[in-house]
Image 1 (spheres, rainbow, N blue to C red):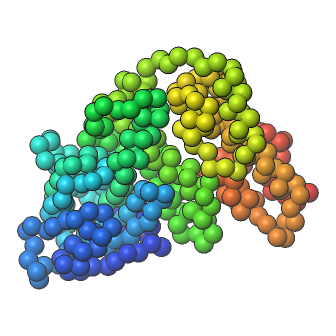
Image 2 (cartoon, rainbow, N blue to C red; image 1 turned 45 degrees about the vertical axis):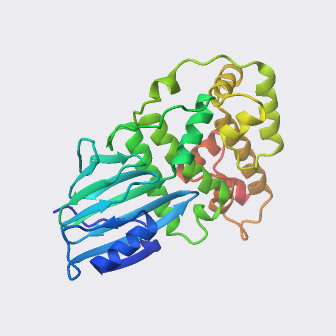
Image 3 (cartoon, rainbow, N blue to C red; image 1 turned 180 degrees about the horizontal axis):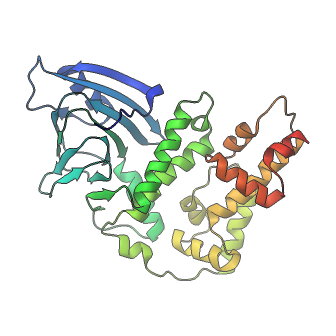
Length: 326
């Protein structure tokens, strides 16, 4: 048997032995569900932990008993990531996905899903609003989408997208357990939310993948210069690349291409460099008895502290702790 795994343990929603309580809490957190094979006296022994990051709901659920779950038609996108054991997951009119520790399922709005879960099954569940994903896609394409966004149903967890999603979820799990952690800082929470959305859009195949990777027209230098001016004047603003592109009247991809050609970087990487300078200035002026490196870095949106420390050392020739001590 695979070892017990539990995530988001600090965000416990319910421990529900009975069917009715399990049905109620899952319907409240995610979407209406039913247990068609269960009776009112059946037990499912559900453990449910859940939290929100921006508008994304992230949850961990575990069942001691083998269960069948029927969901209502979803209003949003759902990603089901098995952690222990296995499940057969099938949206209406679609081929089944056999969920394991290496294969997750991605399910579209407007369709009910049936999950046949083995004993001691556990999974991570992401619920991403349909309008949030569609808006992100439109901003990258620079035009409205005319057909519903449709992902491939199988998400390989060993692939780039699956690994990126899992790494972000692990950072969320760690942050949730820490009072005053990354989730308490808007810039850090925004970055984690954007990473989840963009990992799904760029690494999981869908019916707009070809349009996303198609060549785009080169941007002129004037819009790029204006974007740089905006970033430098307001580095603490919770910029997204879509908001920045709109502010200079460009598509996201054109702005990214303009930054690549003019500055050999991306808009968000340029912004992270500006925020790194802000961290350096704060640490240089701070009292080490009053603040910590983690506190300052997280407030400026750096959620992976190992990568932050490496980038800081490359930029300033010393570790952030050395700057603070000086």
